[in-house]
Amino acid sequence: MKQFKGRVVAPGEVKAEALVSHGGLNTLASFQKALQFGDKNATCGDQNNKDLYNKQMAGKALCLPQTIGSTTGGLVIYCACSMGRQPACMLFSQPIDSLAGAGVILADIWLKGDHTKMPVIDSLGEDFLNYVKDGMTITIKKDGVVEVA
Figure 1 (cartoon, helix red, strand yellow):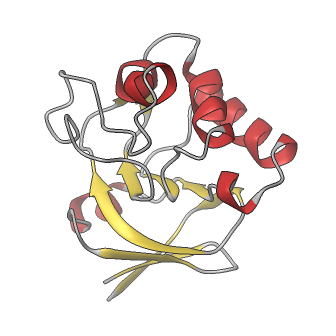
Figure 2 (tube, rainbow, N blue to C red; figure 1 turned 30 degrees about the vertical axis):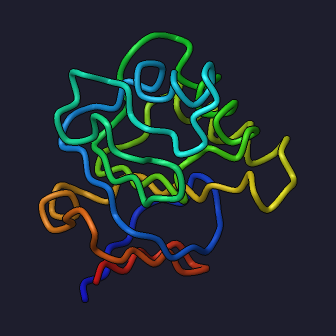
């Protein structure tokens, strides 16, 4: 087991299976099936993300460097949370971008149900993204420490 410390963007405790992307997450392309067509598993629809394409994102510890794409990014994250189709948490190796940050913070403040919560930690570093692999167990502690086993 290895521990990583980043910056808490949205607080919370969670334990989930890791799903890793070494490229940026295009939020609109990735969550389109979940938001428009009712895919409750949030199967990634971004054909340009070889790490995530056709994999279930809902309920997973999504480990990534950053998000990419258009200005809809924050709204897509907020909507995924409001529909209960979000990852269990999002863990960024780099500082979170402003669009994803806006969606995460709005979801954390405006949505109050347990099914809508999504802890988010950023600035975990490249060592984090190089260490974590699909299927590993991720635990986020109350103080924002991320344990990978």
